[in-house]
Every structure is written in structure tokens, then in C-alpha cells.
Length: 213
Image 1 (spheres, rainbow, N blue to C red):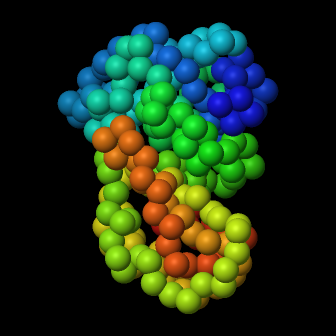
Image 2: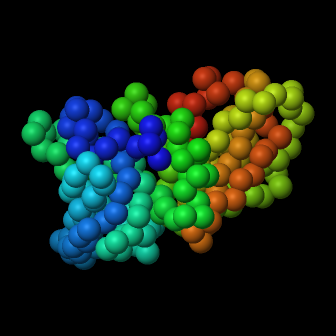
């Protein structure tokens, strides 16, 4: 995934409070119990450039507990610390990597390889909910009268959207354009691509989609 991920040795260069997309092998996973009785993790990720510590808070852990195993290979969207000199990362989204899904995952994440330029990680599909599975394959999401084009917008979905599905549909319908909306649905370690019939003006709705997801 060269050109997609930020090497962990370069995370400090992103600055304080910025989004980065990193990937590697978990060399250490330590569970902690919060005062409320929830589980959070302190993990160490290793890539070819070095090691970095990462915190996984209870919300994400509950959504993706099976992903956080020692020796697991993951891509993680995380935020750098707001404290200068503190190189720990705070995980927001996690994407398990396997030999079967590596190419598709790299393609899906490529447009989000510079998260520091984004106002919110949710504008990317994972940069959406934890690893859960999605309901975006429902037929009501594939309607409309698109204009044919070769340009596609891939949105990675790793969690259930619930009522947000209807809000997305309205958003797509109200902002027609030349870019086809495609969903890369992560479920049970595999990626299923769903090409919708919606063609949108992505620049107009990107931020709104990020807020919804």
C-alpha cells in the first residue's frame, strides 16, 4: 500500500491533532478497563519504518474487537495527539488486511491517503464505523437516472448505517453530478463492491457525507 499509508516514522511530521492513515502489524495488544468498566486497548503497531503506540477507545473496540489481535495486519485511521512531542495515535477506524483484500482495500483508501486535509475522518467510508458489516446493499440505494461516466467515488462501509441510509439517499438525489457513487462493503474479512445508480457532485456533498457517516 505504498503511497496510501503514512509510514509510522513520519507520523510526527503530520503535526498535532491531525488525521493519518497508517498500517502494519500489531506487535503488542494490552487491554485496560476504564472506570466505567469498559475495555480499551493500548497497542503497538509496527511497519517497515518503525513502531508507534496507539490507543483504542471503548466505542471502537466494541465495534471491532476481533480485529485487535497480536500479529494482526491492519490499516487504521487515527488522529495524532494534540500535545507536541506526544507521538501516540488515537484510533478512529480499523480495516483488517489480508492477501485477499489488500488490493481492493488499497484502491478504496487511496483517495483518503491524506486525511490531514480532511475536516473529519468520516468522509471516508471507514474512516467510518468499526468493523461490523453494512446494510448499504439494500435495493433502495440503487435507484435514480445517472449520466454515464467513468468517474467513481468509492465509499468504504464498515458498519451499519441504520436511519442514515435515507439521509444519504436524499443527499445523493439533491446533488446530481458526474461521479458514480460506489460502496466498498467490508464484511467478514471480505470486500463487496456495490455500484449504485447515483451520480453526484462529490465536491458539494463530501463534507455532508462525512458528517452523516
